[in-house]
Structures are given as C-alpha cells and as structure tokens.
Length: 116
Image 1 (cartoon, rainbow, N blue to C red):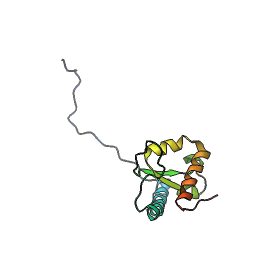
Image 2: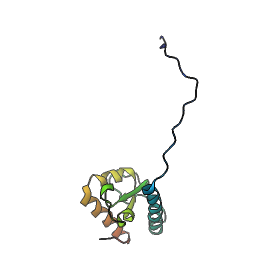
Image 3: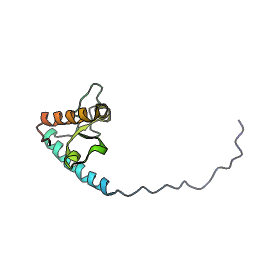
Image 4: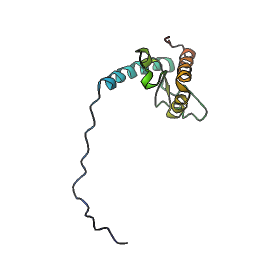
C-alpha cells in the first residue's frame, strides 16, 4: 500500500488548557459534598437507590428532582438521589413532574426531608 505524500509532524501534540471551574461549578462541588454526606449517613456507602430494571447497582452521580433549567430554588440542588447512569437516564425520560415525584418518593422512603 502506498503512503500518502503528507508529512507527519515530529512535534508533540499541544494539549489545550481546561477552563477553570466557574461560580456554578464551585457551588455544585459544595452541594455535592452535602448530598454525599446526607446519603452516606443513610446508606453507609453510596449506591444506586433508583434500582430500575437493568440497573448497574453502583453510584455514578446524583439525580436531581428538577432538570437543570428548572432548578430555580436552592433546595433543588440538594434534593437528590444517588444513581447509576442507566437509571438516571430512565429518570430523565419521565419528564419534569415524573422526575420530581420519583426523587421525592425515594427520599421519603429513606427518611430524608423533601421541600415543597
């Protein structure tokens, strides 16, 4: 097979610098620690509590009671349930009302507070 006439560079690839964490990102880092502590007190270890059919049974992130554009009140940031990506995706497809109801149902089931 004939090689292309294009010359290959011998210089190392330059990596682009990642953007610094902004105001919203820093707030979420603090909120995530609050959520983490809250659920660790209840469960002992973080795992998926959504447990839908096909669940991966491991913690990969928090599912919120409101979608990102609709999280207008401070309690939306900490009204969460730990879940795997598979269950989180299923939860997202329930729509805004279904998502909020499901996260609140799980929080009540585990004896955690909900906000109205």
